[in-house]
Image (cartoon, rainbow, N blue to C red; front, top):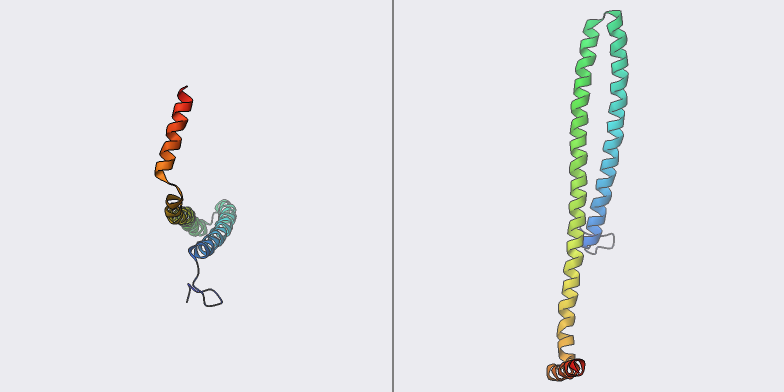
Length: 137
């Protein structure tokens, strides 16, 4: 049912690509928001860790340090996912361009027989020959 629009008609490739690109952009924005939230939390933890270190609470500092390491790993994973989504979006652009090119070639292949029927080759050859003779004078 995902390939049907609200009227029960099958979605075009262009519509599907547009929806997927929209979903990708939305996911990238969500990842960026989460990434910024994690960075802010990491800064808070670093400040808290320095404060606790001055007070001599080594156990709490150790827990916060492990938490910061986990946050950095999560940030790396988010950045990787963001890059993959961006790459997917570029691939969708390529698919859309290929589809447009394919449609244009299909139209050309439909038009070419009509043009061939309208052009009479012997007459065209005589016109070209006359043009060459006029041009050579």
